[in-house]
Image 1 (tube, one colour):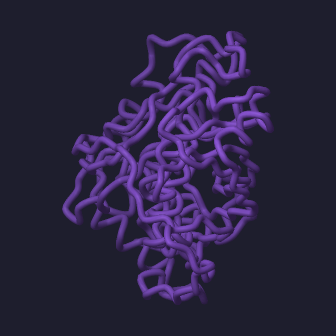
Image 2: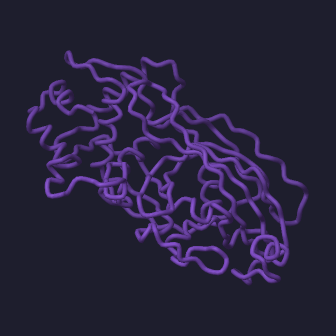
Image 3: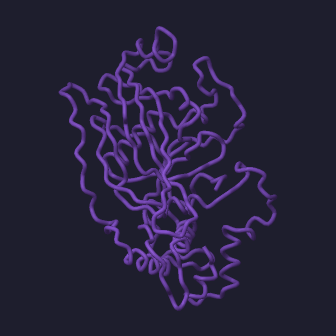
Amino acid sequence: MKPEKHAKAFGNDVKAFMDGVSATSGVLGRSDNQPCKDDSECGGMQCGIRDAALFEPEPQCSVEKHGVTFNVLDIKGLISQVYNGASVGTVFTGARYDGDDDSRAVDSFGRFTDAARRDLGPGDFHIAFSNIMGKHGKSFVIDTSADAPVWNQPVRSYNVKTVEYYSPEEAASKYFGGRSYPFNDKAKNVAYVATDIAWIFERDAAAPYVPNRVDEATHYVLELDDNDQIIGGEWLGDSRAEHPDFLWFPTSKAASDTVTTFGLANSDVQELLKLSVACGATPDPTAPPTPTPSPTPKPSSTPELSPASGSSSGSAASGSTSSGSALSGNDTSGSATSGSSNNNHPQSTSL
């Protein structure tokens, strides 16, 4: 984004506007910092970008305002700046790990001894995507890496590929090398689950669509009660170290009357965005999604986990999304914290 473009097009003082952007999210605001030596020392504006990706439609083409041309990346940058300065409520679950990435301290089962590095737990993870995305067709944001650097990315889709049921004793023998299940004595059944999760990452190409999707396979067991409701779980194999660190989502769009501290008005940015969206041949992102039928569960006295897939129904400023199906037999909710803040999301430490 080139802030001088917006200042010229909307009649702002160019130098004052550029200095305001820099003081908020650029070099003037970090003049006392030392140059980054690696990714772990770098900071970014990921929260504003991710909020915008979940709520705003995808810019489609360059537009002109008062003789100034704004390309797709310019518009995305302006949207992100608006959300970075907006007061937006959030829902958050999981604890950020901010420890030593070189630590390999694990217990006898290969789990990290630091609880913050073990979470987000697979129980909360499975409940979140199957309800938020599978049932409600909405997206959310994950820190894609369980180590200290934060890589906030909007989730595009999931695919539950495998569900296998075991007794606690069978699961203990198969996955943990023991006779009795060692983690949760309230578990009456244990389900092995393989799920692929896909998220969107940022690209620097000024085009309406650029391939920008990452897929990750996760493997875990879910601990189930007498009614096959999820009460916990454990990561397996490589997923012990490679799983989301935390999960969050904004509860609303930036208010239409939002104005950032350096004078960027959401109404001005929405004017550019509306023009850019109108020139594309994409469907209206606010149109209701077409439901995809859920897998039909087998007759059972209790709900049953089933392989299923889903994706978000809204559009993202970083990529396209579509509607998806609910996960059969899962109607539970996970723990989360919520609140309203001025972009009070987990601190991003990497671009």
